[in-house]
Structure formats: C-alpha cells, structure tokens
Length: 214
Length: 152
Image (cartoon, rainbow over all chains, first blue to last red):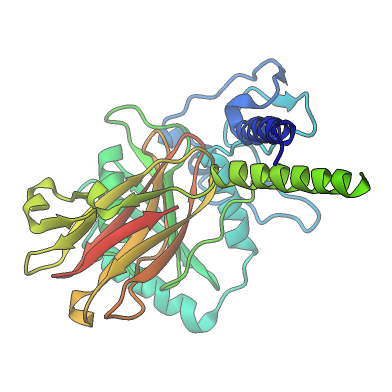
C-alpha cells in the first residue's frame, strides 16, 4: 500500500469513528435537540390519597377506546414539543410506562384456565409477605400477566414487598418477569402510597415499553 | 495505468471498509469477569473464590452474587452470563434487574438457569432499563457453581 493510500485510510478511519460516535451520542436523551416548552399547568397536590385513580375510587384506567387511547395524564407536566421531528424517541418516565402496561393489561383477553388459579396463588402467597402496614388492594390476571395493586405506609414497605414477592427466589410468588412501581410522585419520607406490579407467567418476560408511543 | 488505478481504488475501498467495521465494533457489547461481582449479603464474600476472573461458590449452600452493569441508554438490554456447573447440583441461575433513579420502579427478567452441565453455557436474559436507570445481574450459585463472564 502506498503512503498516500495509507494516509487516506487513516483519515477515513478517523472520520468513520467521529461519525459513529456522534450518531451514538444522538441516541441519548440529553443530546436531543432543544425543545419548545409551553407553560406548565398547575399540578394538584399529590399524596397517594390524592392520586386521581385512588380519589375517584377507581383503581384502574378506563378501557381504551378502539380508535384511540382513553389514558389521561397522570399529572400535569410541562409539555415539551420537539423542535426536531427526526429526533430519537423521548425517554419514557416511569408513570408513562406504567400507563402503557395498564392499557396492555386491560386490552388482553382473560384465560379462564389460568386466571382463577393465578389469582388464588397470589392471594395466598402474598399474605405472608405483606409488611405490617401494607395491604393488598386488588389482584387481577389476564392471558399473559397479572396486575397486583397494594398500599403501603412507606416506600420502605414497598421495597420490602418487591424483594419478598418478586426478587427473592425463596419467597417469590413465582418465577416470572415483572415491573413494579409506585403510583404518582415519589412519596415523601413517611408518606403512604399505592403501588402496582405486573407479573408475567412462570418463566415468561413482560413485553418491553413502546418507546415510540406518544 | 488503468490497472494501477483500479488497484489503488481497491486498496482504498478495503481500507475504508476496515475502518468503518473497526469503529463500529468499538461501540458494541461490553463484558466483565465474574470476579467483578460481590456477594449479597457482603458477609458471604468469603464463600467466593476467584481464578483468572471467574467466581466460584466454595460454600455448601447456594450463594448470591450481584454484578452491576454500566449502561448508556434507555431501552431493552440483552445480558448473557457465561457460567459453569459440573452437575445439576452445582447449577447457576441468573436474573437481570433494572431500577429507576428514584428507586421507585423495578423491572426484571425471569430467573433462568443453566441449560446443561459439564461445560460452560450461556444464560441469556433481557430486561428494560429506564432512562438514567441502573442495571445489574443477580446470580444464584449452587455449591461449586461458577460465573465466567457477563456480556451485555
């Protein structure tokens, strides 16, 4: 290879590395093009008792309509409109992921052969894992996963339940993929909260969030 | 003259192709050795023995090893744990776990175990990691079970 070819090859390598590094950085949320912000709407008070779903006595989102989702925003936020329509999908917040799971759960059909048995199994096993000031609010199952709603006096109790019911191989309800989160804002120290967990069937994983969904 | 030009262009094409492949390869999977992990709880650290980066359970009961995995992006991450067990009684099981930065959301794969014994095997896991979240693999090693390498 001649000297000139070698120089051109080295230059091509440096350019390729720079281009690939730049495209990789563009995938991170922090480097997305600046967005146009609209003024925030007043956020309601947010103890767990004030959570829209808890306050309304409705512990689930309404079933989505056929044409469009009936999901309401969990809380008012600054609405950001991307100035760059070709930007990577926005990073999802945990409550957005939780709302996606709600939609998927209630869109699934029931599996009569499995649902009843799974609900009974959860009710029986979780009773011995529930921390002192926590309570099971509801258990429902569909064809591929179950929804478990609990209330806790503190975030520590929520974490204790997650460890015992889902992570510890000695006490877990069963060995399935799961997603668990508190509803609403992260609670202040000592504040109560409602949490929802989704547990896939034995040996199965939950579907990942849809990052392209609005 | 024409042959010389063709040869020159061909060399340039090969060099540029190698450059692109090399640059792309440098941005792909990461790996760590089993010895990068720590016992959970820490009091069990004395149950683990290392050998050229591998981590083996030398106690007579199942012990837990946690391996933190650095991530750069939100999304689904595929974690492959290379482990070894001579027999079913030495098996190894692993689970991939992600948390959000406020420690109020958890994602997890199911726990999967070695498919066979007597030679190193892969345990393939997949889990969603939220933006600014963290990823780890937790492995449960039966006596004499061993973790070689974790790739993600």
